[in-house]
Image (tube, rainbow, N blue to C red; front, side):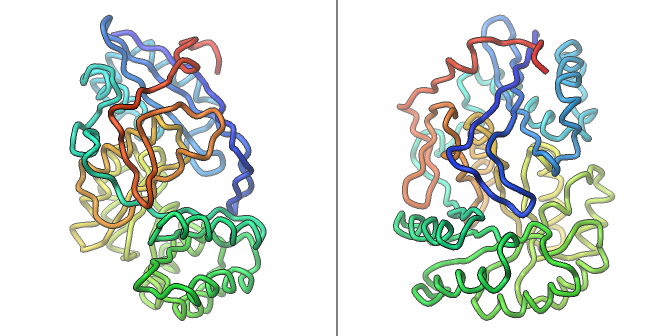
Length: 353
């Protein structure tokens, strides 16, 4: 096998805000693995200030992998501390083995027979901008809304959520919120109590990571079910996964292959979650349609229940046209539509770190 890689910068259509800052661009690295007949493509998409991988060393690591591709294909566990690269390698290999057509997990999804229910994501911004997004998602037919909170003051965010609840009951619209570690332990419980008055389905990561005792206490006392996301980053051993879920006992785990160890790492988390009765769902992490496609096909393959977080493919101006399509509140794969990868395939190189 021969492997190469290429760096590609995705441009956001509009600035996308989180509690950590505002994204206008994001870099992805694509790995290409060829057997001389077919080529598999995988996306390595670490997130700044969140991934455990040092972004400045991505090029050097990918160069090493490409030079020793047979070794890393045989021992992918060597990439436990490079989760986005492990995900990219898993994707490229599975794509290659299935003929290089981006059909990683053939199913009713890839045949266009079933769609995957997803939540409508509301990005942080001014109250007016967030209201516009909420209205657009509701008009599109979404019944599960996920709102990123923590950037505005809490009272403003509460009023936004109240405005939804005034119009739609919990039976009509499921509301999820993602705090991205925005609260202190001292303020979190009071905030959670106020959020519970609005029938919030769940809250992701209310306080900062690595405070297991405090997070466990919040999970015991919170009237809103707590989901963990950032807390899982960097934990790579099955022993530590088991310890985390048994110590904190959240209601849900939110799993992202690019952050949580690729497909293999996420499946380990799912195994540990189900052992103790925790729920889980899958979320993409601002990948292009290459990564989103892989995550969506794998998610359907897992027979995942409830709404998944797979709606980010429309964020970029220079994404790759693909069979993926959002219709209503479902993500579909339209097999009659062709991939348009000319920009990506124009220059396969490992000289641009």
